[in-house]
Amino acid sequence: VQLQASGGGLVQAGGSLRLSCAASGRTSSWSVMGWFRQAPGKEREFVSAIRWSGDSPYYANSVKGRFTISRDNAKNTAYLQMNSLQPEDTAVYYCTAKASRIISSAIGDSRQYTYWGQGTQVTVSS
Image (tube, rainbow, N blue to C red; front, side, top):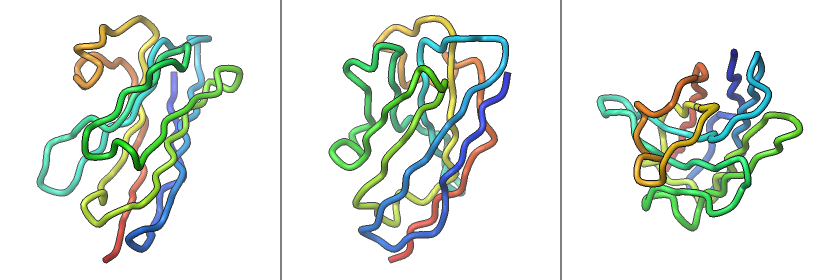
């Protein structure tokens, strides 16, 4: 099983980026796909997650209203559209997935997820 993240880069404050996370391997469906990020010297933090149905996606308060998560189940791919980026969004972004269900109260707990991608760097300049 592999998760391949892409789409990171350098952008000015106020700009946009779209991250992609393509899942491949023995699991044909992913119950939950999500994104976490880790800035230098900080712990990994939850950004967003989405269930198979695509209903009621989850967002960290810090990105709500600026980021949008979506998924294409036919392609086993999740996307993170990031708008109005700010320097504090600078981090390595990791995509993650789990084949089985995660209860809502635990959706932001990195320990719930089984598979992780390699990370993609997002740098926002001021």
